[in-house]
Length: 223
Image (cartoon, rainbow, N blue to C red):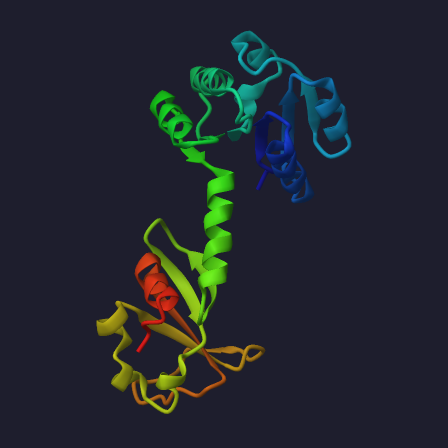
């Protein structure tokens, strides 16, 4: 399978981080910024580092941006520049377009003009840090979509010595248990029945509505 070609428009801290990370995994990266210092700083890491105006449609066509599988509009300080960049990407047929927004108003506008996905890195990072601080039993979460996730967690003390049937996690927390890891370093066991008795060193792996289960954990209501 051919490597993806990804355009990164805007080479501040956010855009540079994305471009470097993608390059480390053999992606073809076209990195663009108006500031020559930013461009020169990225040259050792990316396929092409180009100085230019991302609001200029002809410029984006000239550098072959339409060959990108995905474009990240990583400039977040100027709403006008972000909007024009997203609109230009749409005009040359790029899909998907991921855009950075610095606040809710930027997010709404960028969604309206055609960005496929809009992210607010500072807000999302703040929420992630807060959730990590709030966790009582959850050790890891892998999102499956916007609603459901695979969740790894240590059993509360009150669960130890009880069977899965007694705990009835599906009814209480809308969780389907898919595996038990007997101690953190052990292989995941998927061959267990409702009579399995929870041990203190177990790590339980289940699929659940992430916000629902997280709220139970953060409020210490896993019973």
